[in-house]
Length: 377
Image 1 (cartoon, rainbow, N blue to C red):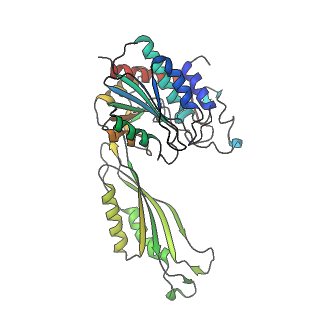
Image 2: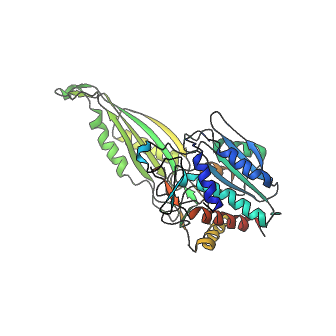
Image 3: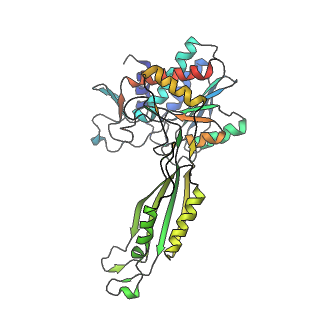
């Protein structure tokens, strides 16, 4: 390997860091940036490793945010090479975390090293926000660092999250927002009985089916230029005793809304309750709000990211708010502009996760150009 970003990506992959473990990745990055006057502030919470690295005290404050934890690799028998042994094969770098998101972390570091070698007196401040709790419950990771940033008055002007956003080729898609996530656990009560005597029982499956069908077919809102329409999906159903001759006494359904700014969590909860009540169900319903939707409209950061991508790749990136949630949902609460840009996401969370071996260097060049766009007059 001759490319420094590719080499650092491989080194990070070797550090097995299955969530919430960091595996020494943050210490490695801190050591690498220490000679460039980055001050390291560990902000560990429980089993979760968090690290804030900052150089400078002036404005604007540009934050590069990412996670060092990865999802479990699964059985090694499903991998063509060991998941934590970085392997280059047929022009691709294989290893758990290659796309999600150790390439981005490596590109953060080498972009900073490159820009400070040519602009040692770069104005403003650069910071890295690293956590090992993005792939897990995300209770003690970025959200805790954001609380600390607010307490200490360190409010970022611009945040770039290195999530793998690209689809077909590096830089073709950037995320300037994300949908919200609202989950529910619905328990519908009936009366257990013998299947041969249905008049003595109330089948909760039969009772719930029309209501679930209406929830699934409801148009919750309309798509906009920034967001797709809100979606409702049932992810699990559970009922029955295991016996074929027993009408169950209750049914439990797990479901999720992915919603845009056209709807609110409160309005979705209220409309769901109304549908269930209209069907005359006896039920309990527990809600969990995983994320609020957010959008960073066209402005300084979006324009700077788009120009950086065009400068390096020649592509005109598409703005998107699709996909799951990210730690951008916590950063945006500080009032910062937040955009996500990273490698291709076609193999994330899969066995044989990989990236094109030429992409780390190009991603580093994009991040370097972005820092120039944001920090130089």
